[in-house]
Image 1: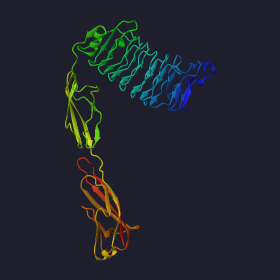
Image 2: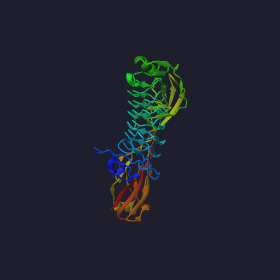
Image 3: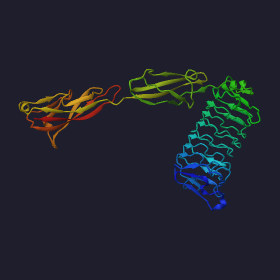
Image 4: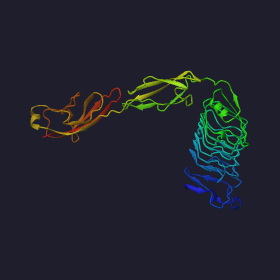
Length: 435
């Protein structure tokens, strides 16, 4: 089974004695209730968690909790479910997963969680929830109208707060938005009951709209931030009371971790230089927040390269990051051909088959080429003593006295490579016919 409707289990608890639900499929999809139903989860279903965890409602989802998994359409809503444990293997929770799950009091989230969907925790009754550091974006409507929420679940790793993410969260009073947050979208905290908002990132981009922090009664919270900050400009434009936190602090990036868009490239003859994505977990702006000096700004050749980053403006200190250009695969391509040798001439002396007669190239590759005789056979019998290969030019030497017949001569062709290409060895078999 890959999908089901929640009311498949019955409309009312009194219709049966259901005490446990187990979903064994990882790819199951939960559908909306069908028309004119009033399904309620039996009162015995109060806990949820992974299979074999001794929960009333058990599920097999390993990496993603699907949308609506615990929402109003099923075990959530105004029904009996009170607590949910998400297994450590889960990295993503889908849209509406807990939407209107109004009886759930606690949700244990795994440390490896990296993404939550829109409306994920909207219209719940939870007062707090710990989002792991891996969650860097609070999506649109994520906690909309979760009125009991009194603690802002925004960690120092969050970079964006989505549209209406906390709209209607009237339990929020005094909140601090950490300096990791770079963007606050429209209506993010609209219709809350905020007394004050501290914005610790002086450069945080706040949606150019009066309602970002407007309370449900029309009042406006006090906005606190640093002198000259984007938050100050926002407050003054939309008549919010502004309180200065003083001059913006200087932030050290000394030895901070730098994340580049790529740590390694393969040589292609063009300049390869990665973009700087984050410095110390922050997305900074070159020229405003830092300067970058590349060890070789026009780096094309294979090798290791370094970028030195120096803080600027409110950032100070120096840090470095490295990347490399690795050698490309050698393009050597070789084929064997059939070549004839006169038996009469072999009676008198050795005969030579130059490259082009027995061995041809579709691509000569990169670097010095060398040749080595591997085997020479007629059928399964070896005649390697009757052949030789010139190491430097690849000529096949057929020795005097070889009898008539067809011989398979196997040669390894090596291209040494060079600065930008790896070495390569290609085996080739030439057919030598003595007639």
